[in-house]
Image 1 (cartoon, rainbow, N blue to C red):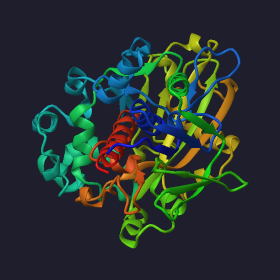
Image 2: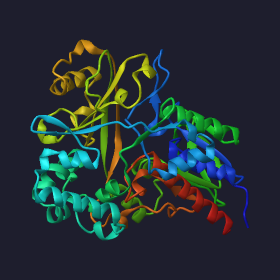
Image 3: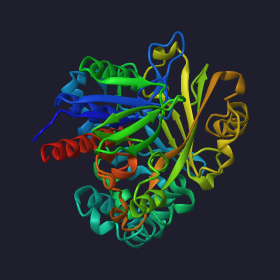
Image 4: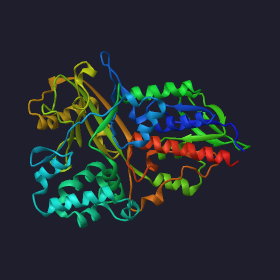
Length: 439
């Protein structure tokens, strides 16, 4: 028989808020605990005086195929605030930048030549777009599968730089289902939210509060323990305040779940700690002028080209600079292991490292263009899916009765992002509701 539950959700990212939405709609009492003093998680942003929009700390966008996010926007009555401009992506080849975000651009791209290699590239891409057999693909690495079917030249030119840039030392271990997912559903049209992703997070939080959801900001959870009688207790804050709940959903990283619940049974705990991930370092610049006069949005940069970052993203070639007081907003970012030196450098030290790379893109660039710099880092940004990774995914229902887990590490074979954060959050809420209905 269904009973009214009091539920705690740890983390006010899009996954946690999506779960709270479904649980509150079902008539349950929900409290969200968030360690930061804002909602949005890794999709949160910041806003300067004179800006009409916020800027994401870690560059984000939606795809036109992001059905989970767009469906949620429809439900919330916010779809009219989604915008889908058409930005331009370029690849680096022999010291020059070439557009590569459409079939026509791919045909013209000189890095693949004009013969069989380009045909193989096209046929492999078509197969991956049409096939749904990702479980078969996860038995092979990207490295082995692409070398065999796309050929050595195509792999070296197109896919190896992507894998090395994303996964560093794990590049040759990542399974092919991960790349299938990237190619299968992504679109060239990219989307954002009027006012920025932080505006959406704030609008969503306001709707949740209107539904009775209690969002506790600046209040980190310290531990989740099982109480006599079956309830779960969450301790929070410096005062170690404890509250009891019928169900608890954790939406943090696997490592943080392991620290929060040291009583997890050995096999589940071992599985959490065995998951691998890459961190991210992003330096955001407010500039007097554009880095790309051509209007390019996303510069894909191979590691072997010797740039000090993996990607340069000119945000104001995606949304108008007028949203930011006329300043040009540029991201320089990289995926890195958590022990990389970039995690210890200051804003100024990283800026000094990055300036020569920006000047390779635009020789006229000078440090005097920089109005302000922001540095954001996270050690949990990109899960690393190894061969047969579906067998390593932690179950949403943990072995501790009443404790659930929903994270980026469980959206596989899909890649991390806000669309699948919403999907995994709502899936967790559905499982919680099913368990409650079942007794």
